[in-house]
Length: 146
Image 1 (spheres, rainbow, N blue to C red):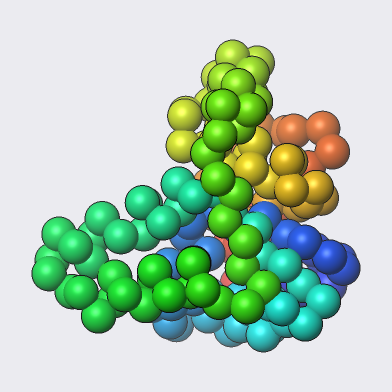
Image 2: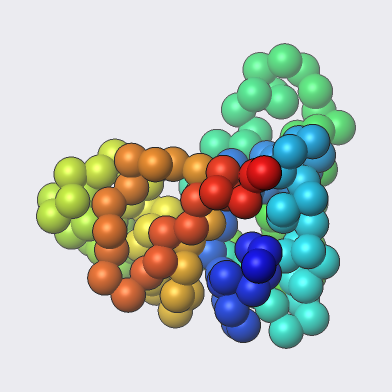
């Protein structure tokens, strides 16, 4: 079975790293992610926190790669089927609750809070430090490598 089968139908939350692997065409992870991104907008919504935009732009801006920064911006803010969850007061409170209960870092808490607020059943990442969150399956991309 592949990632698309494991996440099931509907909205799926993605950590920033999934966008990095997809946009920069990571040789190992692109084949895993491509089918999921191909479904975006066609019955599938890819959800991420607005924090992702910040996270993915840092390196391209640091190295002066504006075309790459523009690609990230276009996918995250204009691609069909991609939804950025804004960081609102409610998001901050939900993230604080997660951080207090699970002792996770602020960026991770914001990503998980965004996933849950959007009604996602799973969160796709490569971060092995994330705790078990009731009602949210944490799916490790590395588990799909052969």
